[in-house]
Image (tube, rainbow, N blue to C red; front, side, top):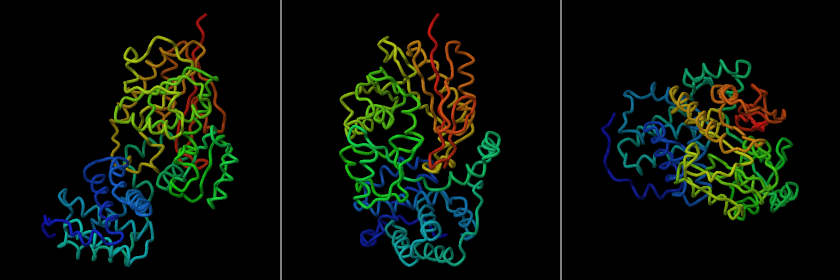
Length: 447
């Protein structure tokens, strides 16, 4: 291949319609595929650089499609390029994969996709590789990528674990994990009933469906920009998956209860609890001080900010934050492998390592043991993860119960998913929801 160009980006090319979107897609994908960065983090930086909401939506669509079909696209690169692309050519690799996604998964008009992507090569300072980009994309247009098995996207160690945990549901899990997630909304019942908000959506020409499994949930068959949702800026509605919305039902604190949300960022579950009952005495904790701003923004937009306290602290370091007054309810939405939300975070399949699970299981156990101390007798701890791995879920809960004599599992309804060791597991795509585990644990009164 031609040596890497150090020429500055072409300002003229970058100004052309759609080119800057492809430039940003190339940079995001380069960071994720080559540098091991988080897709969510990279998009949070890239999206504000695009003024038009349609361009932002296209950027997201390209990146998600490229990562979901990563195996097929990288296989094609290996076959079609004389030499593999090295780390210094990360943006070129990202641009080619972005081009493949446009032609293949997104089925964009070929002329527009080719033109904008080739111009993006020039805008990235890769004038000498623009011809290569054009030739490779035209080959992709002619030959396509063939079929790829969903399992090819998964690392072998993780695929083996899923097969061992869910042998009867493997194909369903693999397929749904690589499909786009629907847009779920949570109605703020302090402002509207669900029926009233459905009427607003109908008046706005937005198709929507109520979901019986969660009282505040609405599903949009076709996603729309959140800015177009009636009252979104005023907190009338929030984006939150069905499975996450059921946490409020799983915890179900009494009116005015004292509640701690131990891993609260970005604040959606705490906000949901407060929307249902503004009299709750809620403390939201998160170990990452940078994420506290997200919690505050969520609280302020939904109008619940005055009813909650927020602290940046390790929830397992109880003496650092607890005042000694027991809590009525504890929500532990624990750090986990995120294997239930691969459809929302496809880079999990790229970045997760087997040793991560061992570390996460140890952290989850430490949090469970620490938070149990702050719960009053008769109180409830809801343990939740967005994982589908039994080591993090049913086996974690079983181990906690075995070492905690005053803990008793309380059954949740069938609407929460499969019964798994007394907890409930929804698998990816079931009822349109994310993969998610919940277990409701009651602290027995001292006799």
